[in-house]
Amino acid sequence: MSRAGCPYDNAPMERDHNTLKTALIYAYRFETAAEPDYAVSEFSYDWYNQVRPHSYNGYLTPFEKRAECTIKQWCYKKR
Image: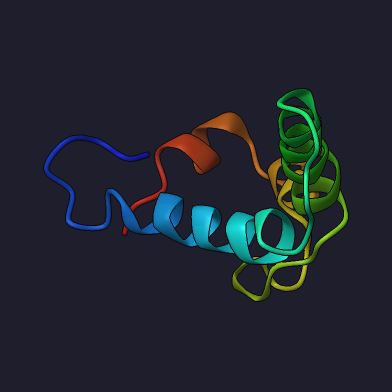
């Protein structure tokens, strides 16, 4: 999330939640409360960040994109 008052504040999170629900939550039936917790963490940390390429990042995964940028470039990118 970006700083307060930024008009693009919520869009990345809404997109992330839409992808999560479409690809995971609506596609599977969970029997216990622990199963969705585990599935969401696996989806977010393993598949979405380290396996799935994003067109916005030049078809790199978020993990690869962060590795190629310095902290200053990543955190203080001007729009």
